[in-house]
Amino acid sequence: MATRLNRRRFLQGTVFASSTGAALSFEERALLAGAGESAEPATPADPGLPTGKIGNLSVTRLICGGNLFSGFAHSRDLIYVSTLLKQYFTDAKTMETLSLCESRGINTAILRVDDQIIRILTNYRKQTGSRIQWIAQAKLPEKDPTADIKRAVDNGAVGVFVHGGVADEMVKTGRIDAIGKAVETIKSNRVVGGVAGHTLEVPVACEKAGLGVDFYMKTFNSKSYWSAGPMPRNDSVFEETPKETIEFMARVKKPWIAYKILGAGAIPPREGFEYAFRNGADFICVGMFDFQVAEDVEIASAAVAGARTRSRAWCA
Image (cartoon, rainbow, N blue to C red; front, side, top):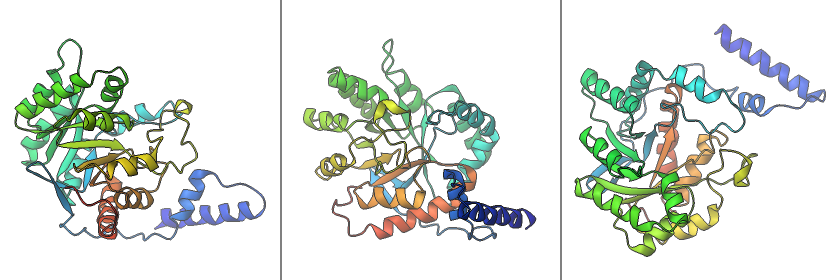
């Protein structure tokens, strides 16, 4: 309680400072916005977190993203953030976070294909008997484009998709056939196959080519935050055309997992989740710290319920 009171005194002092002419920082405003939150622990969420279908999989509308576990942070010009994440997300902390996700009803995680993730998932399953579904992010290395796909399937992935950065480059250089071959390889292994993209050109090209993808991942947010562009400005701009994304995806009758929906932590979850679901996303992939899981589940459940009158029909 003392910590809570000290925090309130700090915020009260901040308000006084602002009234005397001192400007509030972004972080101070964020703290001030949460000053009235309860000091009591969050109550368990409804275990019935909404789900949808991708192929034969039942997937929760909120999916746990894995960039934070692997130390990947789109941190603008803050050079220490990735190192901080790697220090925070030890194997034990990563497993604890996955366990919290499952206890709150999240049944799927999107994770990389590398030694760290495979080691953690293997140990986590052995220790807990977890049945969390792994959808794997696969790169297509030139030496063996199928290597990540095979490794993911061999280690229990239920789905694989082509990495967004890889697909961006392949579409840009006219190699849509290579994406098609990757999707064929994925589906030949009897798991769901998808394609991700940061640019709208990726799903546009895949649809035009008639690739038999089971789902798309497309970055999506309102672009209504201070560092939102243009793209070369920083490393946290991943939706340059939100209006065009809404319009195009409204015509696509395949499941859509929206990601980068919070602009690398610049958009509050309540705002970002609501925007994504209301404007057509079937699922959202969100990287979460352990202390964010419970609230994110509650916000996601409310956002899905509030999006029942959206213009794009649920495609999953």
